[in-house]
Length: 356
Image (cartoon, rainbow, N blue to C red; front, side):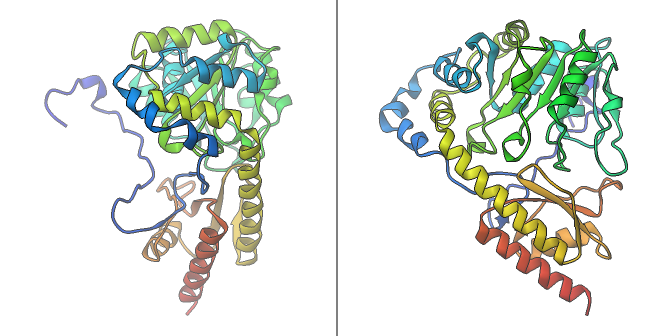
């Protein structure tokens, strides 16, 4: 770092994204992207005429996209906030509702950006350990009296809480904001959006990066009471009113309107996840029961770091962390059937090599 960096940022450890190779061709199972292309309407929406309009600023209110999201979830347009990926939505959430005296509480093993946002934005936080089986203990959040953010399904485990539990957490913390980060909800979870009419302190965050096949477009959104959404709008218009570009608004609108395509893609991914889980267990892996578009697995006798490196040598990228709690686990995104067959074949070869 330079000598000019503000001291308040000197100790921040930035979030480390999954590897994005630019040279050698890999099978990428490390960043939970969709193996399928965007909905057909996306390609039709981004045409030569619309590209020519890039000389103009985008609509700061992203009205077509907001309207499409509101229709899909049966809420008012004043209950929808859109951002440059769900990461920006979450950052504005920490900024709007957190502070030195307004703490956030979240699991210690979850999306790695939560503590980064908190430290960057000067928000006090509590990272609560999971149970030994990697599940969230609802008792840690019921009546805790702090703002809460829960990835549901959680990452990197893939475990999910039910709506009754989420409702109890929101109900027991009426003076705090309860944020449910639903990046993976379409792969087997239950969206808390159906609880919005009951709890005015509930904020539901989703992304277009996973089930809607638009990771490269950077579109996220939040659903909540009109008052919570107005707070997020205050943050956005104090920072960057044009946070979504013209093409992102068009692509997001087309993707949101094609529910049939979303259902087709998620059904394929869930079927592949089941097949891969079964096969890995036959190979001796311990695999958590995931409701996301990835699985979290380990193999006794092979350190996670060694298995990660061996897969990489065979051209397959998965995700590995050095945290001692999960150092023997790999998070494996669910790709196409062909990609997963290649992964399983490589894993089988590695096991054979390890037992020689």
